[in-house]
Image 1 (cartoon, one colour):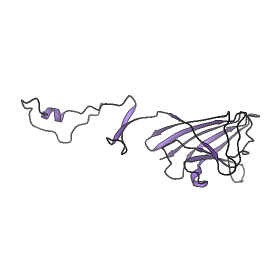
Image 2 (cartoon, rainbow, N blue to C red):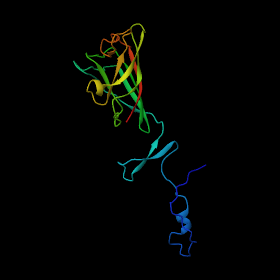
Image 3 (cartoon, one colour):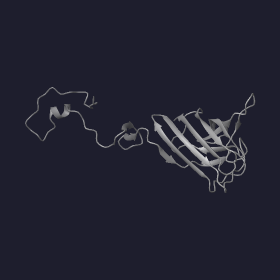
Image 4 (tube, rainbow, N blue to C red):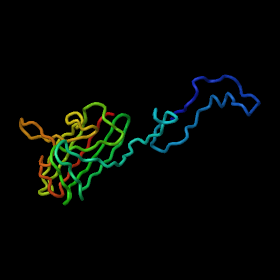
Length: 196
């Protein structure tokens, strides 16, 4: 069943003879929403001229994350690859980041962090997700959990990965030497979500 937008007040008057004026039946009729495409919804947006805009549900948007370290020399991607995608549903951002080292990638030193989708800053410090790492030298896999780099490292709108050390040892942030030496062909796949 379709939803119809109508005025709250419905006129009980009959239409008049002057067709140049808005008739009661026209006032009472449902409004036609123009614009938008399939799978889009009309959402409130105070930055828009008309106070609302069409938003595509579930559309994944590509973005290019930045890669930096908390301390020490900055890394250089070289011929490695670094890509990202995200989608926004309500106030929840879902995102992925894929990073792979190349033969000319300089992994720098210190704790790594990657930028979150532009224009979608997290509301608070909590973030859910995982980081999956594969050693390019021997195919050994590792995994960790995502954490907000702004909360722990002061790197605004960035995400990092905590690697479990096993046993009772404290988890460690992902670095140039943790959890692998990052040989050519190593990769990191991040998938996460957070509230804006």
